[in-house]
Length: 232
Ligand SMILES: CC(C)(COP(=O)(O)OP(=O)(O)OC[C@H]1O[C@@H](n2cnc3c(N)ncnc32)[C@H](O)[C@@H]1OP(=O)(O)O)[C@@H](O)C(=O)NCCC(=O)NCCS
Image 1 (cartoon, rainbow, N blue to C red):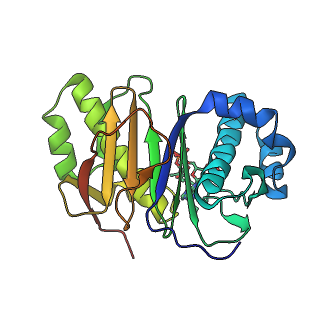
Image 2: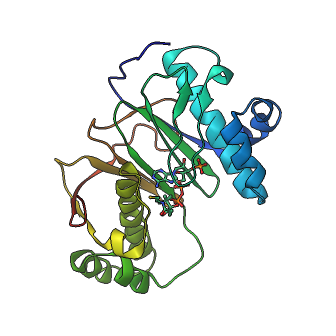
């Protein structure tokens, strides 16, 4: 398949369990060699389900966008990097994220950052913010209380991770603290959030098209501007 232009990124947010169950009865037998090697190293059932669901979701996105059989797409599986399309090579960029019961994947013409977070166990949000937030972000969070503070922190955290994932960096606390987030139009970063799920999207190409309707429906995202003092 020749190089294909992708004028707008495509994003799909789906529940992990049904995709993983389907993958176990089909995709698992036709994974690429690098995917097979990654899967063989996974020991946790949750992580196995996430990995397989992500791989099936990406293949369906590719086939739904560019055509062909979902199982005809051969993907790489590097550690600590997003997968790439090995064959049929078409230059498209892939992004993945897993959290809680959810998996999200995207296709884009240039690298995109995608991250999902779901609420976890209760934690000391201000102590975490001291490690990963800027002074302005910490002041904002200190002015909130309880669930509103936790949700606001989760939204910034998700956005910072997506920002770093677009750059294929790791998310150490010091690096997260260099990524300053501020609500406002004119940037290349967006978040959708409700009580159970936060999704962040970072892309120079703007907002993606939803591949299938998802939990955020037609709701407009929050727009953010990001200043990265550690970028090079
Ligand atoms: C990369 C990182 C931010 C991912 O965040 P996370 O919330 O733990 O995991 P998510 O589910 O959101 O994302 C994982 C997916 O993103 C992709 N991915 C992995 N590392 C990535 C990176 N550095 N940049 C972009 N995407 C990455 C993979 O596709 C992965 O899914 P898969 O393992 O099923 O293929 C986090 O794992 C991290 O900081 N890792 C440290 C490793 C590191 O230092 N990597 C940098 C290498 S230079």
